[in-house]
Amino acid sequence: MAVKIRLARGGAKKRPYYRVVVADSRSPRDGKYIEKVGTHNPLLPKDHPDRIKLDIERIEHWLGQGAKPSDRVARFLDAAGVLKRDARTNPNKGKPGTKALERIEEQKEKAENAITAAAEAKEAAKAAAKASAEAEEAAKVAAKEAAEAPAAEASAEEVVVDEAPTAEEEKKDEKA
Image (tube, rainbow, N blue to C red; front, side, top):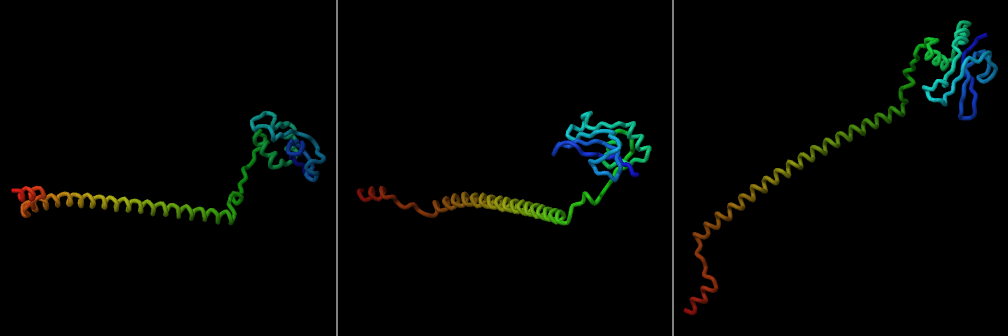
């Protein structure tokens, strides 16, 4: 007869409570068992002392008789220091599926496009700022030249062109 140390579920709906039992491997999960060797209440906090209660002496007796613990019970026994459990790894379980890989690739492409667009916008802003700076410089130069040119032209015109008599001066000349 193959003997297992496993959990038997009890408690109400959505309020689980487990008994750690030694049972024939062919018996149903919540059915007939040989001996109750502990309890597990998953609703209690992980650091609560009543979350897992084990009768270590009886468990060691049944392990000596050849009983095999289930995965969950083996975890409990490893935490209690009774049994050394090898860590299990399933590297394929953590890998994303094909659709998830496609979504990841799309997100990467969108991110790369956004980075490229941001870089192009930054370059365009730099070019626009450079062009406006050049335009301002050209406007300053043109304003300087314009300010200097009329003054030079005005002084040249004063020398060359005789002043025309004003209307008041003409009236004075006519009276005289």
